[in-house]
Length: 191
Image (cartoon, rainbow, N blue to C red):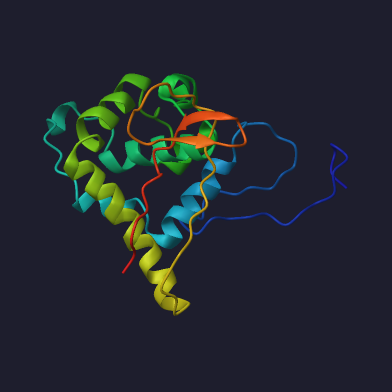
């Protein structure tokens, strides 16, 4: 038995960084240890890393603190953890688990304004959307070939994001009983 009354459990060490150990012994260093799980999934299926080759970084290297891959990882992991908008980035950028997951270790992650610029200026144009689409296709391609499948169904539940009018990507959500914004509502053809 340990001093805090918990029994010893086997520790988990993610493959992407074996120096990280999760032992669930009650020490609170983060409220979102799931960031490390997102990185592990990202690494195993090569989801975000290959995007580095698809995006042109025109920023000055001497004034750049975060790579595109680090910022995309931070933004995607935050969304996956339930932080849909960038407003929480300034608080989350100091989270130890998020910093480890995006390879920042002892440095802070990107701020809200940096992530917003990434979304609007880099990912919000045709080449950025294509890079995101290609990353999803590449990550699923290996899985589909391994399982000898032709189709992959990705079930993404929407959040209550009410929309008014006839904007693109708006559809009725029966659960919430209103029209909601569904950014992933267009079908994607694989293979």
